[in-house]
Image (cartoon, rainbow, N blue to C red):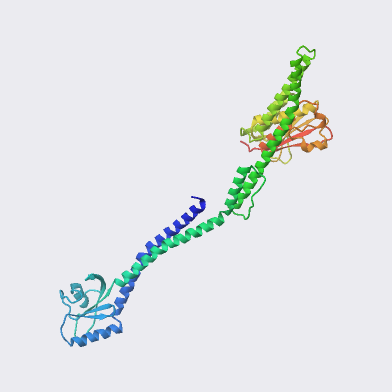
Amino acid sequence: MNLRSRVAVSGAGAVVAALAVVGAVMYPAFDAQMRQNIDSQLSSSSADPETDKEFQAVLDDVNGAKVPTIMVPLGSRLLDVLLTPEVGVFDKFAPVTARDVAVGAGKSPPYFEDLRLENVLYRVYVAPIALKGYPGAAVRIAQPESDRTKTLHQFGWLLAALIPAAGLLAALGARLLAARVLSPVARLTSAVEHVTATGDLATPIAVTGRDEVARLGLAFNAMTTTLDGSVGAQRRLVADASHELRTPLTSMMTNLELLAERPDDPQAPRLIDEALRQARELTLLTNDLVDLARYGEAPARDELVYVDQVCAELADRRGVPLDLERERGTQPTPTPFLVRGDPAALERAVTNLVDNALKFGTAARISVRAGLGTVVVEVQDDGPGIPAADLPYIFDRFHRAEAARALPGSGLGLAIVKHIAEAHRGWAEAVPRECGALLRITLPAATTP
């Protein structure tokens, strides 16, 4: 069962349940109201002028005789006049009871009761009546319950027909409403199916409104845009890696083929050294590709890292100076150089910056600065610097400036630095300088543990 049908069934079920509860409350309330109306009509009949005329006609017919009861039809009701009520006397309606005698004598209040006579159910009202010459007289006014029962049955049948009809209408309305409300979801489903079938991540879905479904559509478009960028980046990485691997592999294959053809050639040792150098370059490139893929994701570990300690250990191993400072305006804290992340990854990023500095210069310097909510790591060298045309691309994969193409390296070191910084919610940048290069990593500072 699809979502529209479930919404329709749920809507119909809710309406049917609500109407059933209402019907269960209304049915006895309607019955009680009709009974109350009948009782009110019966009790008011004794004071009705038409009833008085009937009483007078009864008296004229009796002409002073001492008869116990006389019954007179009054429309759909029966008027049973108990002139001289005696217990046990039975007329065409019902026997006289002690309670009837007590009501006529004023010793008991008027009352209502249900009587079934000859398979007919009556609602009866007994009250005293003042008749000249007949002390202790009473009157019984009876009305058949058939009208009330018939009306009650009709009301029950009406409820029985109304509840399922209302449920059906509710189901149709809920289905139409669900179709309208879920139409954006249907478009989103079609878009997902299209992406699954074709792999096309570049086509967004149309989003209208500002409700939750619209937010879902916007989130889906953002997701496909991110995936499209990720897939494009992977394709470019594969293409770039293939290009970078092709040259050393071709050169190494050529040298190995020459060795295979002329093993006694005097150039054999040089060819072997060249093949080994190229194999080491391939190993370095492969390792950097693996690191690039690994550090492009979220940090493998999430813990508190003291960046000053990481940089101090690295500076001590590599023999480079280290500066620690705080920006003006920062409040003194016992741990100003604290960040959250993967300590091994952060050490790798700073190591790559130092290696890059020593590759192009004779000396390097590490600076760690605590800023307002940030920790900044800078590495500068005394080399020729970075040409202005290369500054925007210095952290791209396999980018090598003109002056660096003859130097060893995979061209992935600074790209790894950028990926590590972004994985830690920071960024990497190259700062323009007149002499030497200055590369910077900015990371969000962690709260004091």
